[in-house]
Amino acid sequence: MSETLAFHDQVIAILPKLRVQALALTRNRAAAEDLVQDAVCNALSAQDSFIPGTNFAAWMHRILRNRFISNLRKRRDTTDIDDVPSSVFATDAAHEDRLALKELGQAMTRLPADQREALVMVVVHGMSYEALAQATGCAVGTAKSRVFRARRQLESWLLGERSERQTPRPQLRAERLLDEQSALHS
Amino acid sequence: MKHVPMTQRKDKPVPVRPPSKDRKAEEAFDLWLQRGLHKLFDDVAGEPIPAELLRIIEEDREK
Image (cartoon, rainbow over all chains, first blue to last red; front, side, top):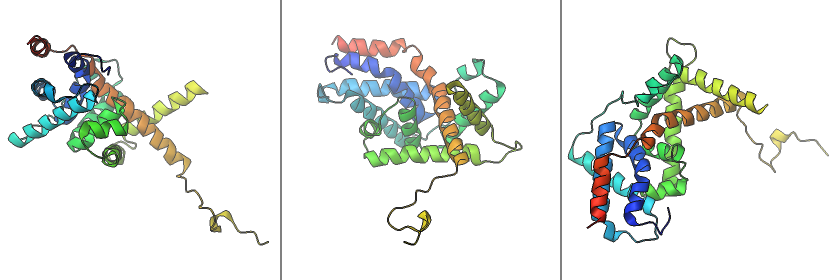
C-alpha cells in the first residue's frame, strides 16, 4: 500500500480484503457486509489517529476484528452453516467437486473464529505470519499456531470422518489434484 | 573400528521422515485446501463494492 495514497483511497483499495476477512469471521454474507460497513465507519471516525506511512492494512484489519468482537458481545452470534457462495453451484465443477467444497465450507464454519480468520488470511490473501500477527494484534507464534491448528482440525474432520464412502470425498479430490500436477510437470 | 549403524549413532540424530505415502497425502490435502478456500472466498473479493459503502467514504472525503 503506497504511503502516498490518500487515506480514503487506501480504505477503498483494501475493501476486497476486508470483505474476505469479514466473511471468514461471520460465516454469513449479509453479516459480513454489515461488518465491513461498520468497520469502515469506525475507521473514518478514527482517521486522525492513523499515522501516515505506518501499516495501514494492519490498522484497518484490526479495526474490523475489534468491531466483530464488539458485536459478538452485544448479541448472540448467528450461524448459517450452509452459507457457501452460490457461485460454487453455478460453476461447471463436477458434482463430486461441489459436494467436497460444500463439506469444506461447512467444516470451516465449525472452526473457532480466530483460526478460521487466520487460515483464510494466510491462504487466500497470501499474508505472511508476521503480517497476520500485526493485522490480528497477536504474537507471530500465536498467528502460526492458529493457522496450524486450523489446518490440522480441517484435515481431521475432512479426512478422518468415516462415511458410507470408502475414501472421504476431499481426499479423493486432493489426490487427483496432486496426480494432475505431477503429470503436468513430468 | 566397529561399525555402528546409523540408527545407533549418538553424534547425529537420525532424521525421522514420514512415509512417502503420508507426505503425498499431506501435500494433496494442502493443495486441495488452498484451491477450495480460494473458490469459497475469491468471488467475495471480486464482487463490486456496494454503492452505499462508496458513498459513505466519498462523503467523508469531501468534509
